[in-house]
Image (tube, rainbow, N blue to C red; front, top):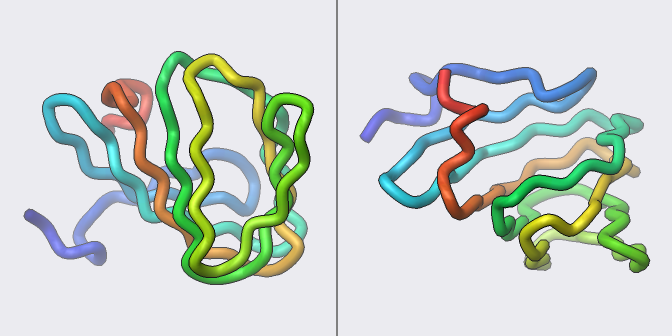
Length: 105
């Protein structure tokens, strides 16, 4: 398995960069988000688990708004509309099932 420094960076949108590894059934990403970055509301067929490591991230998940801070874990069900705004610089881990084919370099 490569070191994080060896994994290609993928810019998801302005201020949001992820690095992803893939198994047969999952994608795991290390994601850096700059303060003020806005990930517009979207949805995908993948289940998603977000694990906050650093920072403060406001997420809209369906009809609910949640504030994620270090140590918090958020489960986002398949096909649920969600988006985020970074209140500070953030670092998080995202886990997707099944594999995010669109994140394979």
